[in-house]
Amino acid sequence: ALSAPALALVKRLKDQQLHETLVFPSPRGKVLSDMVLTSFLRRVKAKSDTPGRVATAHGFRSSFRDWASENGHARDLAERALAHTVANKVEAAYHRTDLLEQHRPLMEAWAAHALPN
Image 1 (cartoon, one colour):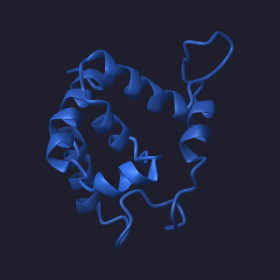
Image 2: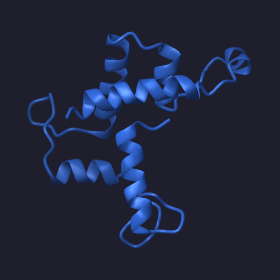
Image 3: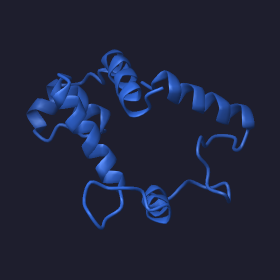
Image 4: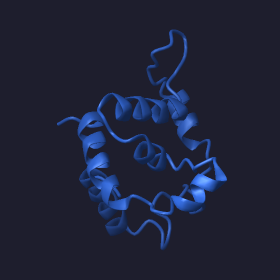
């Protein structure tokens, strides 16, 4: 459930044919490490709300979660968007939907908030 700006980016990357299967390959054509975003944020000294610190990947996720709550988006939907699983095994057994159709408007609204024109 990607937003329109995210879909446009993926299409541009596909057109560039950087890799056969990876959307964001490493410079060596491999899977990116989970530390790539954190390393980038440190290198560019991305601003943080905390004095003396740089922004973090976790901070982006936390910002999304706060924004979703503050804007009336369902808790389950926000948690699924962050790829969080249902911890309670009984609840998880009955909650099988991926909420894909609800993800689309959520991600469009987040894109409009995070990437204003």
